[in-house]
Image 1 (cartoon, helix red, strand yellow):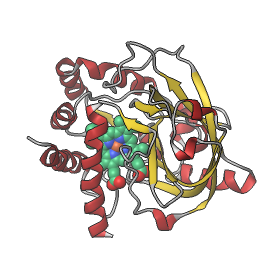
Image 2 (image 1 turned 45 degrees about the horizontal axis):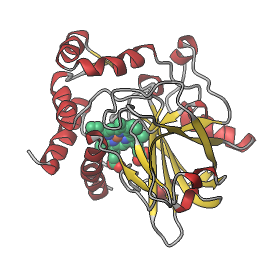
Image 3 (image 1 turned 180 degrees about the vertical axis):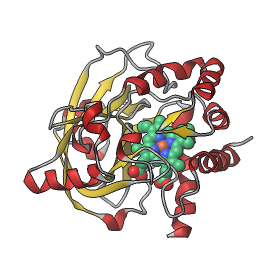
Image 4 (image 1 turned 180 degrees about the horizontal axis):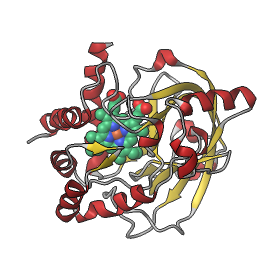
Amino acid sequence: MDKQPLAETAVDRIETVFGEHRTYRRAHARGVIYEAEFTANGLAAEYTAAPHFQAGKVKALARFSHSSPDPTWTDVMSPVKGLGVQFQLPGGDITNIVGVNSPIFFAKTPEAFTEILGIVTSFKDGKPRLRELAKLLIRYPESRAAFKILKKMHAPASFATGRYHSIHAFYFIGRDGKRTPIKYEWEPDAGMETLSPKSAGSLPFGYYEWEIEDRLQKGPVSFTLNIVLGEEGDPTDDPTVAWPEERQKVAIGKLEIGRPAPEAELEKFDPTVMTDGIECSEDRILHFRHPVYTVSHERRKKEN
Ligand code: HEM
């Protein structure tokens, strides 16, 4: 099966498992979008010629989201939250970084992702049913690490206190042609803070969207962009495996959240949209996200 039909199948399966929620993104359905500004400090210039990572400012969009494809799930049913950032480059081009508050993903290949949605067919309170989960972990042992993290995970206390990982590796290409494997992390300047299970239980629906707006009324909300430098042997093609904790990180800039931009909700944050000086790694899940996000975007655009 080539890429495009498998992408249609993947989105169909998401709709079968989570319901068809017309007009919404087929994953990360509920979210809130802001204008933003990214200021690069110039430290990335050693590794990449990418225009937005040379010292200076570019405009951006930032969308915070709850990961569930079902927009009626409560805030705490999806402890995985997302941050999609679209950088608006000089000359009208764009490039994106799309992250979540987990360092790894549960599927290594597009085929595994699609088959997993044939094994895990329903959720209770945001969790897969034990029998289905057990079957999946036997068939796809590489999924264990991500489900272990998910099991222990507490949702961030706010969209502003999550650390968002690109999960996939990318290559920075320097002016001298040198290729450096990197991953991205958005580090919250407010510090990382998670919800206690007790307070999580009492959160009203839509709390995160309300809370970030309230926080912005009181002061700035910002994130530092770190690049994690990959070393020899660090896998660049496998989103189910984290790089060692001790890898060197370089802070290359800061994203400041601005005013709400609900008019941009139809935008697509495709993590494969690159610019000069950055290339996608060999990770097949990363490449699969391009046709999948296109299918989802086409469906919701028609419905809106
Ligand atoms: C096979 C793997 C994956 C599939 C099938 C998938 C599916 C989707 C779909 C259908 C959307 C909605 C796209 C749109 O309508 O614009 C989406 C959005 C999103 N996905 Fe994925 N995804 C995958 C992997 C990942 C991974 C590894 C991450 C972690 C970095 C991730 C993070 C996100 C985020 C944060 C959004 C929301 C972006 C926004 O706010 O527009 N996804 N995904």
